Structure formats: C-alpha cells, structure tokens
Image (cartoon, rainbow over all chains, first blue to last red; front, side, top):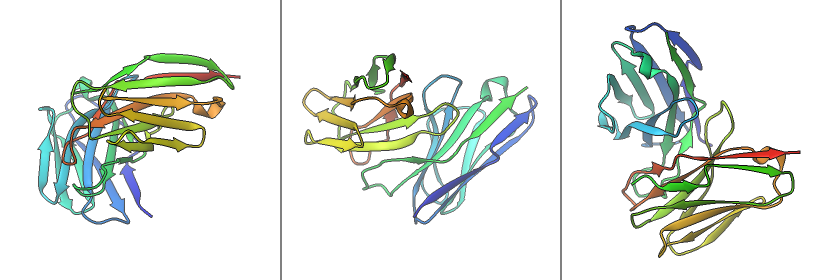
Amino acid sequence: SQTIHQWPATLVQPVGSPLSLECTVEGTSNPNLYWYRQAAGRGLQLLFYSVGIGQISSEVPQNLSASRPQDRQFILSSKKLLLSDSGFYLCAWSRPVFGAGEQYFGPGTRLTVT
Amino acid sequence: QQPVQSPQAVILREGEDAVINCSSSKALYSVHWYRQKHGEAPVFLMILLKGGEQKGHEKISASFNEKKQQSSLYLTASQLSYSGTYFCGSRGSTLGRLYFGRGTQLTVWP
C-alpha cells in the first residue's frame, strides 16, 4: 500500500528565515506530486505540482519554490519567509497522468512565521 | 474554474440528513469529494466520473449530473464522526488539474 510522509509536523520560524519542507511517497512509482497551502479556516491553494523528476509547475508566483530531486521526493523551499507564509502545508500524490486523479494527502506541516 | 460549494456551513443533529452541492461553470470530467477534520489532512471519500453515476461510502453517497455540471454529496443519518469540512474537487479533463471548492463546514451535534 502507498503511504505519504511529511516533515516536520510543526515549525515556528522567524520572518526572513529559510524554509525546507520535505515530502516522500512510498509504495508507488512515478506519482504526480502536489504542494498545497491552507490558511486558517480557508480552502486549499495549489502551489506547485510535478509529473516527474525535475518537472515543476508553479501555480502561484510567490517567494516559494519546489524541487523534485528523486521520483518520490518533493521539497518545498523558501529563501526568506514572510508572515503571510504561515499556514498548513499539505503534500499530496496521485497516480500518473492518465489515472482518475484522486489525490491522497500527507499529514501536513503547520508553519507559523513570527 | 474553482467549483462553487453550497451551503458554506451546515449544523445537524445526529441522525439527520444533509446535502452538499458542488457546481462548476466548466464542463466536468470528474468530481472528487474529500473530508477534512479539524487540524488534520483531507481524506479522499469518492470520485465520480462523467456518466452520471452514483457512488456510496458507508452512509455517504454522491451523484454527478454531467449536463448540469453539478455534483451532490448526500449524508444520511448523520453520525458525530461526519463532522468536518467537505471539499469537492473538479477536473475538466483526464489531463486537467484538480480545482477545489472553498469547502462546506458540517457540524453534527448529539
């Protein structure tokens, strides 16, 4: 069976500090991978998605970036955090492109920028 | 392209029924339903592909009206465990990305 991991679970960072969130998927090959952000009490905002190693599509131009160095690893980064970057960051995977597209979410990282 | 969900919030007593609607201004290939409990990640409930099929998951079922570009989620005899925020997601094609609605907050009281 497939599992998705995210770490850290919670993070408190000062404004202007860097960020690195990691997501890994087990039990599947060549998954589509996604980063979402959810502000408190709000919906799901797609930040990045990837259909393969090194292939990243950005949905929202931000001070965030994403990388996919390995097939089942997806990293979200920032060089300098803003207060507005606070939120619940969710990584998700789905089967490759021609699948039904249902997405499975990881446990999330709760980021507070102070 | 974000689907519109209604209502925004529902409050129920245990055992009551509820319907959550999801509509899109674009043609739909599939509709996905997720439930998110407070502080947790969304959990996939079911997917409906175009063809107007109806699916069920425990006492939760959903329909998809392709012509009306709408889907409805039916919660029958609500249980306390049904509380949470329900999101619908829509795709316009097999290659399209998933767009999520803003969510419907469902609260079930004993």
